[in-house]
Image 1: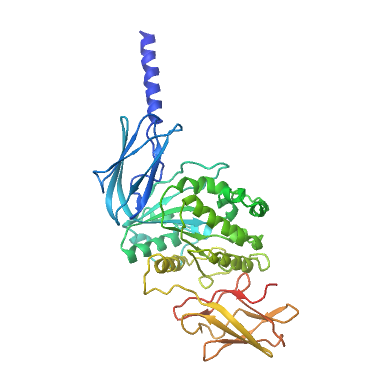
Image 2: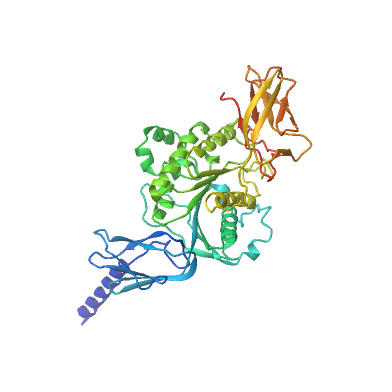
Length: 466
């Protein structure tokens, strides 16, 4: 009798364990998810070989999609999503197992990634200066977040942690402030649900976020990536964060990505442009799309080494040579140059949203483009600058700051700046009799005070390549 009871217990245990290894979905395909609208969306998971997986979407219940698990029990299928709306449900059936994913919305899905200035959340101790009472009024069923915790791995992972959360006073505090306001503005302007995938980690370098395939096909980038020195707050080995925090998401259809990172790469700023371009191309290859990619130029801080932040900002700008990229400047959104984490974050998200609304959603009445240096001419001791901008530039202070002039000796001195009636800017410096080069906010902590008619700051620049 004891043997019989023991046999049943063993059999029951075996069935229980076996069933746990049956039909399974990745964490991101779960209740409250937001799926990209009007798209071919991939669904995937795991189930026993030999069985089929039948998938039925409530927006098209008459069409059952069938997937066939491979030898490793993985399966995938593609379904067509409708225009924005919901809530919907998706039913997955394999053998005797059934999983129903409910309260699904169809809308726009964006990835928010980078390091601490993207991760900066409402509940961070130092607070947010421009958030107001946003958390208290953040109940919004049309805005949802999927947040990953910090993880790394030497090998690509097939699943992540995280769960979809609906925006509310209970869930919003841990969300990226910039990401939240970005998503909120897209939601309010486009009148569609918005899902934000929050995958970021403070203090992380670009190398760790880049797919290994990028380094396998480019030995120069691999050498640049291997130059990174170890730190005690995050792994820097190439690809290890990508493997755990991005690779598990690449099957998920998204509209694009926003990125705020670069501070951790100021040790070797001259390498950043090539590495950053490698990351963007690598993500596009992984997501199998020409992924729209919008990023933030790092903010002023006086703790960087020499002019390393200025050089890195310049390197960030080189990524604009890639199609479907955009950059927002935030040099004016700094409350304290001794703090690497500016507490003005709402406007960062809004500027990113404006750029995306203009370029990806064709919203006509938004003007998101920042004024840029165009050309210069020299007459004796004066330099005249022209700009590409919306209207004439203006200064918010009594005098224009952060211009420098240098002669053939390559030594830069502060310059006096004057706005001409035609909108150009004339520079002079008592210390430079024969100027040959100009710099503007080309320092670690230079804060711009020249703005276009839309209130956007002039992007930092230099005319030399010294």
